[in-house]
Amino acid sequence: MRLAALYRTDAGDTRLHVAVDGGFAAVDELAAGARRPDLAGLRDVGDLYARGADALEQLRELAVTATATVASESIKYAPPVLCPGKIICVGLNYADHIAESRTGKPDRIVLFAKFPSCLVGHADPIRYPAITTELDYEGELAVVIGRQARNVPADSALDYVGGYTVINDVSARDLQGTEPQWIRGKALDTFAPLGPVLLDAAAAPPVADMRLRTLVNGEVRQDASCAQMITGVPELIAYISNGITLEPGDIIATGTPSGVAMGMNPPKYLQPGDKVSIEITAIGELINTVAAAP
Figure 1 (cartoon, rainbow, N blue to C red):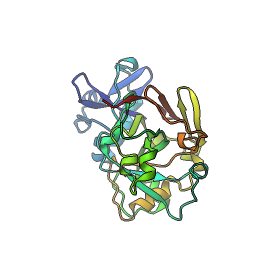
Figure 2 (cartoon, rainbow, N blue to C red):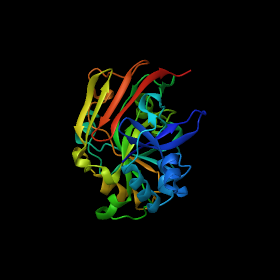
Figure 3 (cartoon, one colour):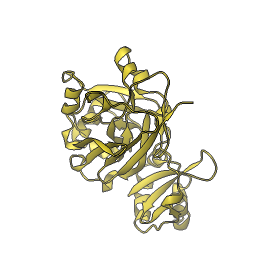
Figure 4 (cartoon, helix red, strand yellow):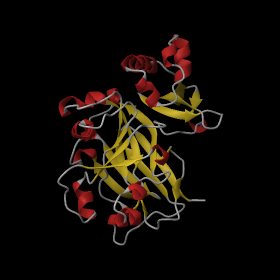
């Protein structure tokens, strides 16, 4: 099952949809047809996970026989999670990215945060703010938490994953490198494109079988197996949930492989008009274009 939050005709209003051959099926319509009002009114996957395991299982059952009522060409995507309580990002989680960053392997897992105001959907613009001249991309696998996780052991951590999607950890390298905290370097508006869809954990291949590719204007910049992560998804969930309670809809961005603009000689930073495409096996392709900030 693949899920998407799609805008309706009224501005800013979204509803959860199931991806099916030929387009999408609105969850509201599936719920009405099956007389399951507990699935009505879902705006995004965060709403779905907040309603618990029974609601998720009911939607999985309905998705099996769903047919498209919304054509793909007529839709506008929102982020699959509209307003997560937390966006926790992992730094330096691929050895080749550590090498291109010209730094040593950290002694501990590196964590930082983004804000919900960073989120934009597939095909939304990444705004190029005037306060940076070194705008960079980082294609990453994003894990969306499906149920509350606190002090979770690694051997059961995958039970808490709701699904997987694609995230672009957009970065302002000059701000990141010259300021003591990474807030402005990592968490400016539109610095977390997310989507286009979420792949249900029950239908997902092992993370080690997923492959990530990032292209800029059609040029392949990143191409790596997610098996190359230094710290895997179960260990990340265990580490983070030891002291930070993860709630349904929270997002973990698992780190980026080599190939970012900063690591090139000379660096090839993003410019207005550039198109960034990030593909991950079984999930889909997240595409955003850079636009000068007004």
